[in-house]
Amino acid sequence: MEISVIGAGYVGLTTAACLSEIGHHVFCADCDLEKLDSLRVGRLPFFEPHLDDLVKRGVASGRLEFTVPSDAIKKTEAIFICVGTPPLENGEADLSSIESVARMILSSAHGYRLVIEKSTVPVQTAKRLWKHLSIYNMNALTFDVVSNPEFLREGSAVEDFFHPDRVVIGAESLRAIALMKEIYRPVLQSRSTCPVHSECPAVPEPKLILTDTNSAELVKHASNSFLAMKISFINLIADACEAAGADIEKVAEGIGSDKRIGRAFLNPGIGFGGFCFPKDLQAFVRIGEKLGCDFSLLKEVEKINVRRAEQFVAKIKKELWVLRGKTLAVWGLAFKPNTDDVRFAPALSIIRRLLAEGTTIRAYDPEAMQKAEIDLPQITYCQSPYQAAEGADAILVLTEWNEFRNPNWKQLGELVARKLIIDGRNLFSADEVSPNGFQYIGVGRAVQAIRTAQEFKGIAAAGVLDVSAVSQPAPAQSHAVRTSV
Ligand code: UDX
Image (cartoon, rainbow, N blue to C red; front, side):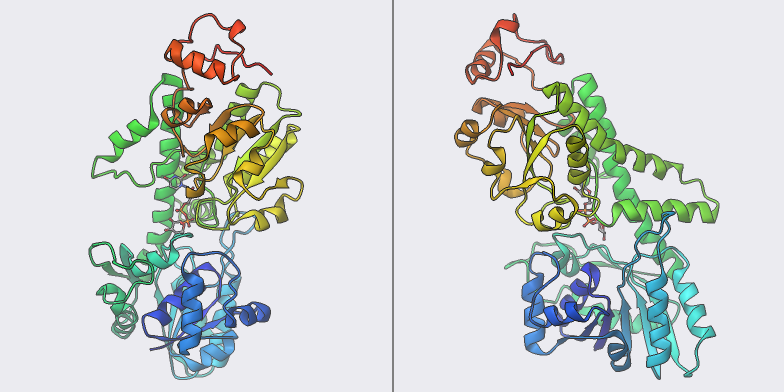
């Protein structure tokens, strides 16, 4: 099928490249001419595993072309709207780009058009779009408006396209439903060759959910808000674990083993970030207000999330006492692994707070340093986690990149000023770290208690503790140990 995709951002470019991979002829359009030129030569504006290969393959095969919106809209019957809907001052989604695509369709298209809303939009937007197209329709255009929300995650966007849990189609006509089924047929029947796995995992075929446009639009906001709520919930429980002397990883396993709950998205940490959860949550709260629904539950989810950065800095302060003049190594800047995206990244808000306390930050991230430097030019960007650790009073783990999982502890121990890991993502555990002479502080885990004299001696020998200040190994929860500065 001939398809155009308007907007070459995360959602648009991934959708366009993947649709061309499953055999459609796709015109990916954007108003940014420079971006179009870069894309034509396979240069992507962001890092996303597998996507650059897909774009190159699509362009080489002629199935993926880059052009301006009006040109694409003229050429194809099906039009995916994948433009940005960033938050306005009041948190509502800015729909002006959606409206301008509608105006372009009205001025450039003739005959029939299937207008497919893929951007994240408030409920009832498809109805508003349909009304707008009807009112300003001067070219006797016939059209259908469909809602087809996107659920791809950054860092695994291509995999999520080929192995979605569900494809949601909100449509009001049989013609529109038939066309949408044809577009997604290879994915729905898992007949497409997935560019991610040499052998695809045995996952059930994606579910096709056919509904009306309002319901489809609500699925998106409600899904993201629910996932964000799950994260804030486990972070709340992590606080209780720290206070009560329990282990959040075990608690999460206990909770998540209940099929009604599921273990996914119960990873505690420094909070959720990225360009979706924070803004979709805010937008959904506003939608709730407009609909006269009390969404205070979601406001709490937001509050819990915002507090994570504050709490993490307090934890560092509690351990390092005076922060001014301290050097901190930061491992990870991206809002999550496998992306270079730092938008609303918890790491950046934590670093800003630590800078305000007068600390020196030495940071390393495998992909996101260039983008982070735009926001935070005043910190030191290092070429490796080891370089970042040089002279550090603590190593802060802020993004759980695989690259950090198995450090050379001996080498690390020789570089740092103090052998202390404060882990904001529970990438490690005390059992992994303390045998290497490092003190470990995770999320939702009792502060590393000195359980045995042996251990105490081990850490003392490693020069972490001032033994003269300590009589007996501290009981599990207390933090009676004083560090030698
Ligand atoms: C999210 C949704 O998952 C996706 O379906 C939607 O289409 C877009 O928004 P994304 O923002 O790419 O995707 O990232 P996701 O993997 O959901 O992570 C979001 C944030 O939550 C990250 O900061 C991540 O670190 C954090 N997170 C995730 C946790 O803190 N704990 C978890 O258990 C899971």
